[in-house]
Length: 418
Image: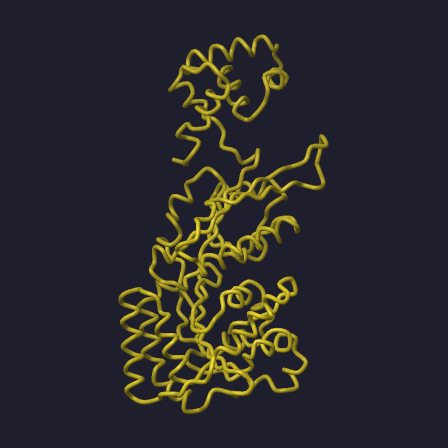
């Protein structure tokens, strides 16, 4: 169920890559014997139990049944996102393009999802040649990549996940032969059992969500999402931020920023996921966090632009879960003046003995105000604020504003909710 699409921005390099991919796969002799079936059954259970990559299973199945490509696709039903993608003869670029864009116009996906488990969809039986000739999904994406024919079914449909096995062949090869389908029918109960027993390898578990409980407690706004923007988790601080600003929102389960920054964010996330799946161990490590500023083009009262800063990083659940196909998660931290954790006055009094007036000065100083601005905000004289600041220095054992601010921003209550 993968679409391998030509992106107009990628030009001749992509066409050359496509040409190489389409011509490097030659039909291998099928082996539908009982021995081949037993070998695949054993491999499925072994890979489930050891939680290593399923890649060897997919590659052997491709050769055995005479397919051009095999694709296993997982939908995490709890989070409503495509959580798993792996197979054989799947170029990274095309696989990600399908997951992030082209699945939304795939006419076959809804048909498969509506069918019972183990009931095969043979695309040519429900989508005739007239439909294929007029449908942009086929004409612009599938046909150029020589993946005309699809045979697919749901392997698992549980409360946690839907797993779909897709077999693809080219136009010259024709649909998957009946004897190959019969072979898959014999394999399917064992594959389904292995997948159900190892379902944690196909979904975003608490372990894969990099400390779900800790993320929930962080006072800084945090969102976990797929590289396509599908939100997997949002903590309470981020929920508050959504109510305070129009620069970030969630619509239909997806994170939304203003159009230019939205496109830039998803483009960078797609590139990070592609780089992760194509990773070369000898390549230099990528920066841990990437930054994307968002500036409101329609300033509100006072004529000041509203600004939001996004820091994001790609996390690889497979490093923890041992399953190559589990999709990585994007962790986003937001900084917005309204979302910055406040200074706890009780903590300032308990730790340093600051008076209520000194607590107010320290809080405003940590929020970035200059001394004159603090005086204006508090309705007091500039000299009074300067005297209060000297008292704060003495009580906190600091003597410069940078040192004081660093101390205030690293107080324990600024990190995690109790």
